[in-house]
Amino acid sequence: LLNTLLVEAELHRRYGERFGLTAGEMAATRMAPTNYAYTRHLLFIAATGTLPELLTAILPCAWIYAEVGRYLVGNTPPTPDHPFADWLATYASPDFDAVGKWIRERLDARAGSVGPEEEARLHEIFLISTRYEWLFWEMAWRLEEWPV
Image (cartoon, rainbow, N blue to C red):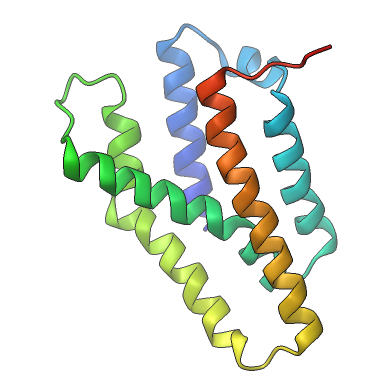
């Protein structure tokens, strides 16, 4: 899981570099409202929740990126000079897919031993993160900015 985060951070750093941005400039860039809200949701779960709650919160992200990466590469394989070839290779990779599978396996193994309250909490966290994933992609598509 940590290795995946490091790989993603490096991927994002390289893309910033390609667009002429330093790591400092990227860190200083104001997040769009949806990105801010989604990351606060994840940070709140990480700071106050249990490990199963954290895994549940990050699962939709890992799952959708692997699905989208595989779909795009499978339907329109990128050429080596494609501007997003690295992005596609990362998220379509078996290594990245393995992260989502690992999270699902951990949660599935625990599923039989949770009570109704914890099950409802995990379901709510998953639903919120899934909604934020949809909003995140929509945010990028619409180039969302703060309205005020």
